[in-house]
Length: 315
Image (tube, helix red, strand yellow):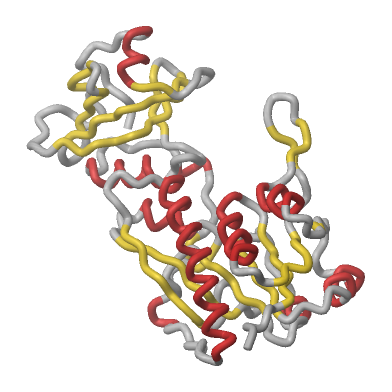
């Protein structure tokens, strides 16, 4: 007997959502429509650029909807016309209303970038790195009108490596999300996907990132600063100041040892990187980007702009 194919409307926008949509296509589900955010201007020419999910959907011949508003009766009727059994959401980028979530008979499920109830909100991947966690994961959840408050359907964990940035971790988590989504659909068809309430005592939040988080305080420990640099890469990027300009920092490495210099002191500047004293241990910076320039290795930067040990970065 052939396995039933669900009629699915997929809602997602950025690169993080692409593996989820690809998983549905590889699983041969019937994706009847894709909903994503409108095209946005990008680059110096500010040319309108389609979201990554739209590009995949069009390549697969799937109708794409890009509403400016999702709460209108007209949009709800348009979705209803596709007769979906289920809706799947991965990083769509907007709060969705109850009538939309409950439109399909099987409701709406979400591929969320944390192990709920930890890190509810817009930036769960980044906050896991910022807070120095060693493990995170993906939760397939039943969506309700709250901010990631719905029942847990299927969690899956993932280790955070010491050199992971928010960007590299997001790639791994997106791939895990696609695999878990496929497993969740199989269990749903078997009647083996029971919901579990979230433990409200364990809730933490992951609010949107802002540029106010970017400035480095060298009095923090090397580990805390490393987490800040990696958690804000690729956006909004951590920075210190060099001669009145922002110097963005990447690829940190903790150098153990007692610190003798004041926090923010440049102790070594060579092809291995910029070694800076912190409130506890040293931190070696492997890549930098001076305001108005491009990102490069510290070695390449120093060849064009030598820095002498003893320089103090502001805290």
